[in-house]
Length: 247
Image (cartoon, rainbow, N blue to C red; front, side, top):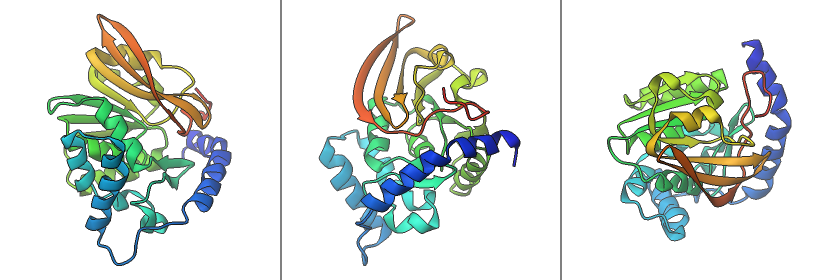
């Protein structure tokens, strides 16, 4: 393993322990036995997403189609469709289904959109985006996670997703501008490169704040300036650089 990723793992070990403790306490209810995975997924959409006000038909269709259990570790697959984030390794998590749907809906995505995702994780959010948009460009700081997600997404037939290992704070300048940017890890401030790479009229959804206590912020670029709206309190893993230092 590259030395810089060892540093990231070491710096996030406490975060991993805290999230694991949370999961052990809160994930007492598992997916109901006897129900098919399709039924569990539809129930997830109906009770966790539609019931909370998500109405975008494109988002709901994608959430019903993408098999979330394929994007979580085997030991957590019986909890794949419950209303919780789950550990995916290296101190990282897959967001709870509602948060994935919410962040996707607020971007108001169109078929022709090009989307930048910062924080590939297991690849689940990228798959949801790829069901809706023309192309998804995803960056993951942890090399092993990026490679795993890239392989899984390829095996599932997604040809409109590009995954690279890199520092998401810097964005992906060569592929910019982006019609939308979605960030699944939390810096303490809005990264300047991401602001610059957002297209005119584009939207960015990003958690901002201190470790595990942030506000989800929606940014819209109008006349070259960003209009900011705080939309939801959240808890995401922190954004780090290639040396494991918090942004």
